[in-house]
Picture 1: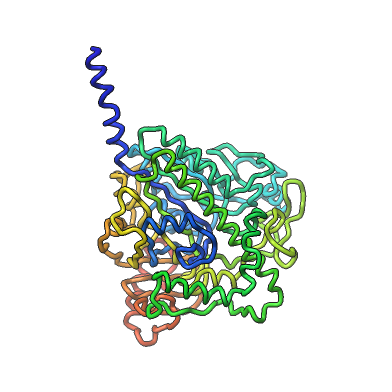
Picture 2: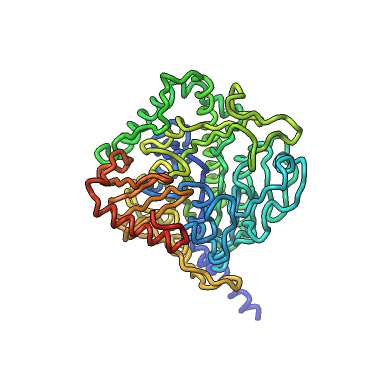
Length: 536
């Protein structure tokens, strides 16, 4: 008996090693980051840790999102278009005809954890505006922030520390929870970006002590408005943006060419669609301070990513952890001038929140500022437009994959192969050797629509998707091969050839009516399939 016991004990390390041959998977998502914000994508912001992911990994220059926060998050977690999984607008819950990556991997032997912003639960306001504003300011308690069944801890995550709603005060966020339990008070030195980092580190520590691999979703709220950052981080960028958005756009564009991210023959410089000139700007100091704070928020998130990487190394999990880094959409043009559904009017202790055109400089807790259209246009260099719109500036994502133990491409490589957030689910399935269910908790589960990125990770040419589709608030687009057909809400279709105009500067619809007809027909068929009004 003792001999058998010793034999079994000797097999345990081998069994654990076999289990851990499956990689950990970590998804790091930033919120409203500009396409060219990180240094490795042409930016001047200090992002050494994001840059290290690029130096030791693979950058995708033609990777796409769904142009806004919750649609993109729904697609990347389910492998399906947002319209198919209940996200037909803002503040809605994922439907039960789909599964999240966490739900699938949990069934396939993974520990699952999430730190940060969810934004995939039905968020309903209070009956009166006064009640709503008190709720947002922690001055009233109306119970659950959304249906509990829709919370991350009930969509596959063993642990979730973060926010349920999509917007929050960085120093005292609304809808902060641990699993189903509200976190009703925070310490005086609380800052949301640091909280997301700290909880991710804690969960890496916990997961590393278990024999099973882990899937972790680290969803920063930075650099989404409001412009709130720590003074020491803001100080690093004092005077950095005094040259304005026009100069920044040119500097970033040239830097992207130097880095080999773009070829000017394929990506001509596009206009800043804000139409605003820095030379004509009358509040230069104020505008520069907005950009300084945005940069500080990015900087802080990068510091956090550095701490996460250090923890992975400390625990021995680094080499066999696949890290996928990206943004949920392009930089945001939004500048709200007053409190509203998800925008507080005061702090917990009753200080008035100050909105644009009222505060002298952003950064503090009472600031509800944002960068606005002109800076957003510069941050999305080399593309046109911004968050929520179907042009490249709204739908293009700077994406990086790093995996020391398994990535077959040369470190620092750049690929122009096309991908979309719906490809994340099948990629995770391949990485984990996981089986996708046909039913889950008695619900019939529809098939995912994405295509795995493993061919690219293995340094091969992937089978390109037949078509990629977009729709958000009436804006629409389709990409087939080198053609991209795009339309703003209520406007005519425009056609662009991505071979020589990836930045969408010249509409060639009139010269190619057959292409327009073909792509429009495909888009209409897709729209009908996912329940949208057609034809356009």
